[in-house]
Amino acid sequence: MTEMLTGGELDVLTGDYLAELTMLILGRDRLKDPGLGYAKTFLRQLEKNLGHVHERGVRIVANAGGLNPEALADAVRELAERTGVPLRVAHVEGDSLPLPEGALTANAYLGGGGITKCLAAGADVVVTGRVTDAALVTGPAAWWFGWGPEEYDRLAGAVVAGHVLECGTQATGGNYAFFSDRSRPRDLRRPGFPLAEIHADGSSVITKHPGTGGYVDTGTVTAQLLYETGAPRYAGPDVTARLDTVHLAREGPDRVRISGVRGEAPPPTLKAGVTRVGGWRNEVTFVLTGLDIEAKAELVRAQLEDALSSAERRPAEVRWELVRTDRPDADTQERASALLRLVVRDPDPANVGRVISGAAIELALGSYPGFHVTAPPGKGTPYGVFEAAYVDAGEVKHVAVLPQGERVWVPPPARTRVLEPVGDAPSLPPAPTGPTRRAPIGLVAGARSGDKGGDANVGVWVRSDDAWRWLAHALTVDRFRELLPETANLPVTRHVLPNLRALNFVIEGLLGEGVASQARFDPQAKALGEWLRSRHIDIPEVLL
Image 1: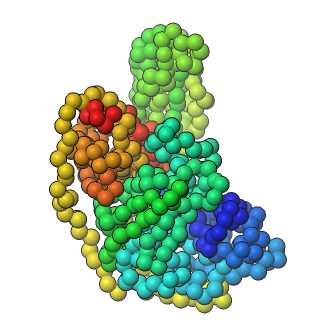
Image 2: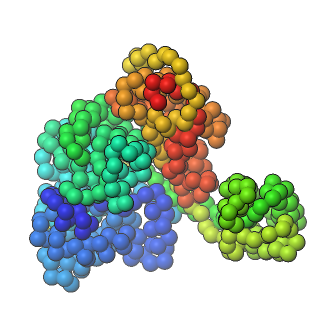
Image 3: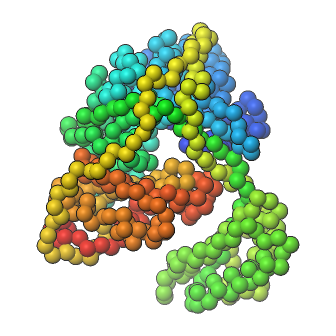
């Protein structure tokens, strides 16, 4: 926050504090103390920067209110009074929904209308509960330019800018597939945060403060546009943005213009997120060193399975994974070792606690040679489940609570449009011909992957028209499944985005019940794209 406020010009500083997992964490906080349920980090950051906020006249818009935006707004007022900095504070509420049986939290994703009303009433700081990530940008943009709720193209442009900004330095070289490209040497030790210069027509320029690390180019922006998206119709409560209409152009060093974005009326329903405690889990990681790795794994697995079978109740789910990190004739003990991971789950904490830890430790003197574990097994911990649901927009009471305390209702959209598939992609250019070489797909293509509940997406893009001709034909759904065998038996949908030279694959159910359930080694599919880039495929030599 300090870097953004002091590094250069800024009108509005936004902050996205809410991930699906965060809502579960805040829900558990609120169980301990009903006065909590908001992101305390935001308060600590703001306390250090209140002087900068006031001196520079920057508006702050953040969804750090989480499950309790009113309490956070009160805490900000107390902070301002204690430090003697005059601030007008407003908040947005109404996202909280009736809790389904067994749920910990249930919240609708609101749009930017409440934020717009708070800023128009003179708020210096606006805190919200669950809004879409892009609403943190559509709300201020609509206030600044006076956009109406049906100026869809302008709002869609702001949604796209908001999506680029929402994960911070992922737009400025962080987590970037081509980070090792020596033709573009940049300092990536501490990438600067991205900025969006938004124009009245909804177009924008993505850049960053001068002198900061990292870089902004069409590749870094493309990567973030593909992150955690799916079909070309990107639905939100304010507008449905057409990702297949986005045009990117380099405008200068660290400047990328986004233009041409088309928008449509939003759908009649709002997405909602429901979290609950799904059960209890425990894990043990056995270290297997040196020779006979497979035999050692087979022995300890048989011993543990025998112990679990003789227990009063076997855990509902038992999963083993052998990770061959070992190397032959290794020069350090760690490099000579493999990891055997046991994960158990059950609705009853008693079935994943002493049953597992006792069985594992009691083997210490009677199992494979060199027996040890990475850490002593514990009692087991709760895991969460995220479920997506949809509610009628008219049933959600979106309210802006202005700095003076007035409560203003934000009406649902007057016009809506049910989401439909975009239809067939435009005719693809013919595939290139000529000799090929077997090589990692990542030598040509970048990728970024992420999670949406239990689903994952992998966006894949290339940097030239010739490479796009090849990628569009080569990376079919069938080939994708071959390259990533974990997806072979799951529904996979491919979306084509020619303007971005990109394909977006959505894999349903790969992540089980969401990140909080930790159903997979990489529970948010963060590295799924990098796994794809490491797989070998026949690539035209001209592209290599």
